[in-house]
Image (cartoon, rainbow, N blue to C red; front, side, top):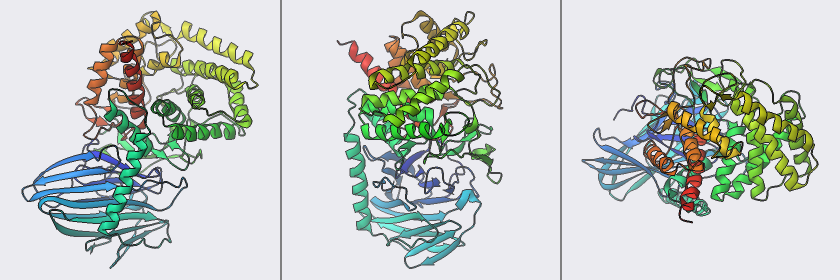
Length: 607
């Protein structure tokens, strides 16, 4: 059976161990895997270059049949089922979750196959391509399995069935009758690592049971009792999978280079921690009752504030590596053709050097969520918060690149000003709640000045709406957060008028565009799809504004755009296909936020 050259982006499930992750297609192919961390160079990247990226296929060899993929309930254990005239087979993929809280060089991907009915012959192909396909490797094949050695990394493939050499790669087959099971384990480790013990069927079954129990116990801690438990808990598991356990920092997505427009240049590396995304994820975690995860990221965020103010320049970068280091260059992998020709493929992210003033609002919003679960800054941490707001009081009235990281020059973005207002507003609240020393008079003057400026310059009489940047006429979905952060009330006439204008201009069959790139050039060629994040922000805003029937219909309709296992990429294309990096944490956290807001509003109808 041949491998699809480039399967649809949505045709994948995600597995991970809370430090690294892999995508598995519905045909049983691991075509993305980076370890030992999310932001490490790839080992399998056929999703970005079919010929040179590398892959690990384990699937029935029958040329005909149908495929189904699902998660074992409330877990990150992925089950891929195959139905053919010969029988029914399953491939189970999982990674044992990290429980130590410390960074590890060793990461294991378990791949078990079993036959449910009849007799099924499974075929294995393992073709690693280290360092984004730039580094060669040497293969040693022995009775205990295969060893792939490449500069700086060693990988092991061990199985309960025979493997054979295929150049510097390996392959194998196993035929199973109903009730029989076999296992292959792919392990990455440091350059001088020794091989782990060979797997056994019983040992793999025990590991599967432990992994299943871990995830189901974790989900039981959720306090969500609303109308959409399956979607909300799948989103929560996805956020957990995308969080680097040693530091508590969530990455924006598991992948890099997947296009916002197939064949276009909007192909970014999202395997880093954005202050914005991570801070807003705190609200979702608090809403669901995951206090431990919220607490750990609150500490991570406070550490960034403390360390950055000791240096020259801006008080925060917009993004960091998962360990908190700020070094993020950007390069093009010229040897990769890109997903279906979507070139260039970028690694790293030059947007790290941009000025995006909104991040201070999100950071203070996040810290205030931590306060709800009893996380209070120590004195040094509070001084870092206070110094940040003192700095912002002098810096907020500047053009910046904005939330969408445009590369068309700085502007006076309205959303950036709204979130600066939010930073001062949250800071004043925390100073009062924590009874900490602060220049509250200065912060109050800055907060009020921001509000007055936005009201005067961010409003367009022509559009009867708050617009993307001062003096412009373009609408921007980021402003859907206005009522959530409290800048305006959800029933404020100017806000309701803005919401109506967005409904007319940015909404297409309940899906929401960020903005119109043709009307507001962002320095990049091509177009993009609707942003799933924005659609869920739209649901949240509709619910807060009392438009509950529309909010619920939009929310329910959006569920139909999830993939077969409940995951969302960044965007939805013109034919309903998912586009962009996958799965995207921002989309899943906004789903949780929208669900909890909508549940609360609908429950209020019964009071």
